[in-house]
Amino acid sequence: MALWRAYQRALTAHPWKVQVLTADLPPSLGWQLVPGRCPDDTCVPRTGSLMGLGDVISQQLVERRGLRAHQAGRTLTMASLGCGFVGPVVGGWYRVLDRLIPGTTKVDALKKMLLDQGGFAPCFLGCFLPLVGTLNGLSAQDNWAKLQRDFPDALITNYYLWPAVQLANFYLVPLHYRLAVVQCVAVIWNSYLSWKAHRL
Image 1: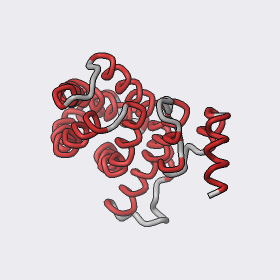
Image 2 (image 1 turned 90 degrees about the horizontal axis):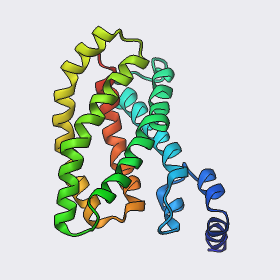
Image 3 (image 1 turned 90 degrees about the vertical axis):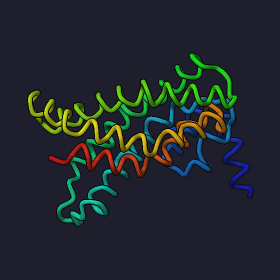
């Protein structure tokens, strides 16, 4: 218990430093201890870690590659995308969405979910899939063909999972915790995205 109180004191006194140092700890021990503080300093490393974890799950459990055939470069690519693209884009989107539709009523949550899933999700997938293709060395023509083949299926799969998650997220969860909730569910989603994005 004394260690816990020391951690809380350190987090209150030096939020940025403690958040960066504890970015990969479970959410119950991280930045959420200081309500109202935006987790900008930790969402990027945590999102990168979870994107990498999703790729490891995809390679080991879905594709059953085994440790010898594991593509470490692919895992690094996914982790880098989490840090450089997914974390900043999704975190920024939640702040914009909260400004566009302020409030936490059921109707507000429904509006946010509809805008998120009707506008943001297709745009995000339409950027993410070609970005992975480009990082994997696909030509523009091959990337376009892969996007046309994979985008509809990825978007439909997105609609099986995310509308219910986001509705609960927007209605029940304060803004500064939303990315953390999404990141927990995203481990499963990242496994799917990694499999889909790397399937040739």
